[in-house]
Length: 638
Image (cartoon, rainbow, N blue to C red; front, side, top):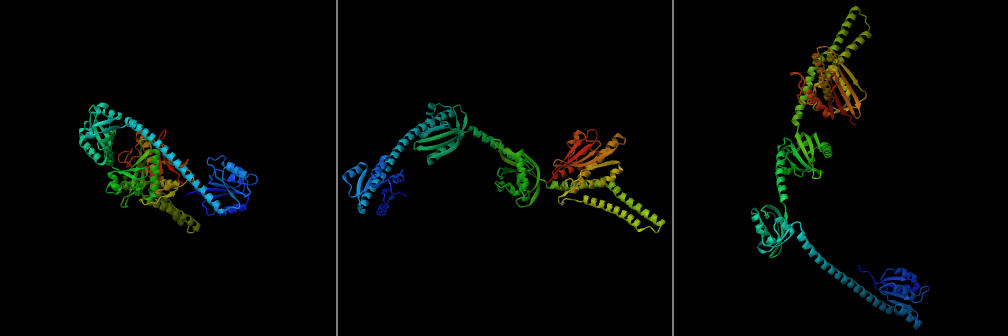
């Protein structure tokens, strides 16, 4: 948008200013009005003025002084039209011209004359502005031309310097492939001097196996004006070099080529290709499914077993897919924790989660994750190993149930004792009732009620034992995990073997801390662990007794207590202990230290697995003199 020229009007009478405003209302100007010289000076600071119309006679600062001050510091003088009365004398008129006046208008003002004169000065002002702009543009053009010439000269110098000092070989080639210019890098790559190269052509350097490729390269260059290819060269010593060639057509008879030696890169690529083939062979040789996942969670590689496990027909169906797509929503937080642990520790192993196939069927898997680092040691990829453990879990469930049945078999005599005791009590009470009834027909109701209650107490005890054994012996595959009190489970387990241990003269010492926090899990499986450890302790006690051929006080201590953020259960015996070489293997399936035919070798392995499912651990400690301590550590859950 064009700015309007500024016109200054100064008069100490408001009516005169109003009159001037009316006169100029149809003239395209920006009118600056002032009632005094001081006001005019303030309003025109830093402003270009096309013409000033000033009342010659004003108080304080008259028109002459104002005209002088307006033009005092301006390079472009402002034309001034003085407004004056008709009785102005000649001396005052001359004074005005000396101070910059260009004309006078006598009052009363003739608006036509004033408008005409102002338009003349406006035209002059506009012409000056146009001239000034043209001068500026002309100067800018001259400066640009000088700068362009200087830049061109510098560019030519830089070009020559670049060509000579470029890290890549530069060849200028004439017709028939003859070299007409080469740089230092070209001489270094080929091993020839400049004079030698200028007597040679491209065909002298191209290796035989790249000859056909070079002809195709040159044909493309002449047709399109640009070509790029990797070719094999021979240096002066006959060594083969890989070079990346980029060429452009300069004219019909001149071509410019850049040659970058890439021998090391090619050898690296070949080695990488061999490495990738080995990597893929190893990937597919694994019996487990393997996924390679980037940091965004997208699958970038998958083994053949991985394809089969996820139900995909080919790798393209999985490339780019989010690995979380194959994880049920309720398991996503578990897999995220696995990845977080992998980033922090480099590896995370043996997390059990369900995996969804593409057809939405699922299977139970064991997941491990390994961090693959980038060249700077930064996290780069994850290798996720998937193992289908559905069949293994089915077998484990069968083994757990079988082990429970074995434990019940071992406890059979103890259970018989446990039931016989209340039966004996019932029998004695009945004999007593019959005896007393034979002596006296008038026995009171209180006596009969007391004896009957005793009978029913023992019947209830027998019922509870049978009910608990029945519940313990069931298959608990579909048991819903719940919170339970470990001391109650320990007491239930002890109740099933207490009479058997008494019969064998084994003392059971329970030291159970009260008001322990509840634990989430399967109470029957936990009882199975306690039973396994108690029965193993019993065998160790009897073995020591057999070996030393003398009686000793056979003792088993069962303790429960809180330690920091864990619940601890200790089962301590003073039996034979376990030799050091057996300790590392004692938790393995089918490993047993007992004589052939005694034990399945599954009890401790199954116990270890049950406690692991409860996010706990079992530690084995050989006591200082005799015996063993099994220490169960369970995390307290909030």
